[in-house]
Image 1 (cartoon, protein in one colour):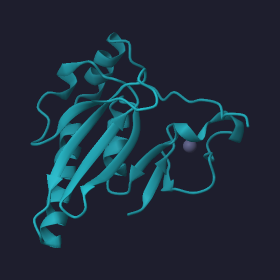
Image 2 (spheres, protein in one colour; image 1 turned 180 degrees about the horizontal axis):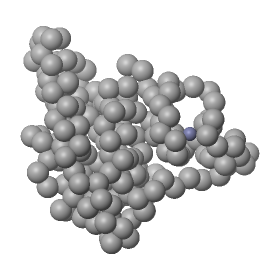
Image 3 (cartoon, rainbow, N blue to C red; image 1 turned 180 degrees about the vertical axis):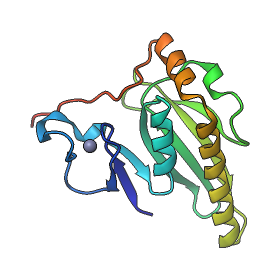
Length: 168
Ligand SMILES: [Zn+2]
């Protein structure tokens, strides 16, 4: 599956490539790490979450056991400690806290769904499509202004944060 990169500033979605800057900003003004990395099937939900005021880091499909179990993970850039934001999520979707093994101080929230496959390819694709579309519907129905107000009140940024590229 193709991986896409989304520009946090202009929301331009493109296939992952060597270029580590977007046409909307000068090269020196954005770091590679600011681009959102998304599986092609999850780029749509990433954009919808960004519209609602969430800062998204990466949207990944992770195979846990080859061909039998997969996790869909939407990594946010922040640890959103606001329970009310994630009420009434679609079936099987839940939040987890992710702590990178190399930096315990940087925790962030992840939306996760674990999918268990039966043998047929067709079932797999159908279930995957349904799971992603359930999440998309849930995001669409969020009241963006209310979400932004809650996030702002809790001290979270609702606009993209960008970094200057690391100088080598
Ligand atoms: Zn851009």
